[in-house]
Picture 1 (cartoon, rainbow, N blue to C red):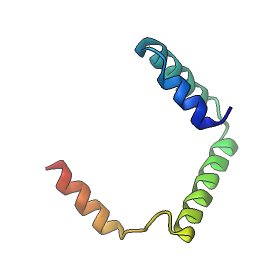
Picture 2: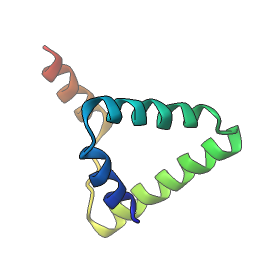
Picture 3: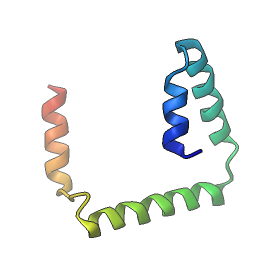
Length: 74
């Protein structure tokens, strides 16, 4: 079963079951070692780099992103 299939199944659960599952999944992240966390961040960075290279994602200057975020907050 793929992650997307699992996600779709989980979203079919009732609210209480989804909350229980979310707590369990979040708690499982606390048990990760520093090396595992670093690997996850590296994997995410590689994925984002590939999205930029392929054109699936677009980069924006940090100042622009922060200005838009501040404007939304107000």
